[in-house]
View 1 (tube, rainbow, N blue to C red):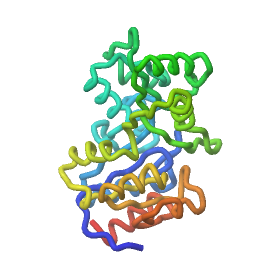
View 2 (cartoon, rainbow, N blue to C red):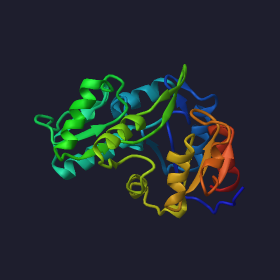
View 3 (cartoon, rainbow, N blue to C red):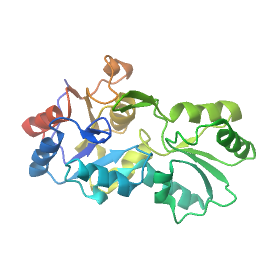
Length: 259
């Protein structure tokens, strides 16, 4: 296990790391309370796109977490910022609950396509409409390209396969705005007033959480909950800084040695 220097900021994934749908990971609520006693420089970074920021925050507080809404940095936020920067009118392949975060953005006569996790949109007619818009020269924006995620009933297909299907059919490469993109982590760190070398990322996705964070100079702790599968740590060139059984074990490691 690599030695970590003293850290000033902790970034924490949500789904699969501290909760799975409406159930907290055992011990995670108490572990977060302990972590807050040592540092307040915490940000919850998530690729969750199936619900708005307000709904996500409500879910987390309902299951016992003491988290402020402004502590959550979402890939939906990154996508919204990108669309406003482009001045575009998006076709939103998002669940209705997630579209609440785009309520003041015009979607008439769309000139770009935004894809998140949207089971209701992943049908032939909707994807074909997106396909035709891309062929007409309109950009494809992927909120993220996760392969799968953890639900209470097991692993479930993520949006990555649908994004790559559109890429394959059109020959166009999507712009990805969520984890593991460098810009996503850099924007989150700006709100924490620290550089990557002073921060650690805790997550269950070895590529989206750990590899993405370590690529820009952060430390990465992989937890064996959520979407973790045996041997995931061997899928990336640079091994995780640490591998822990779960979020409480990761917090124990940080409090013991690095904060």
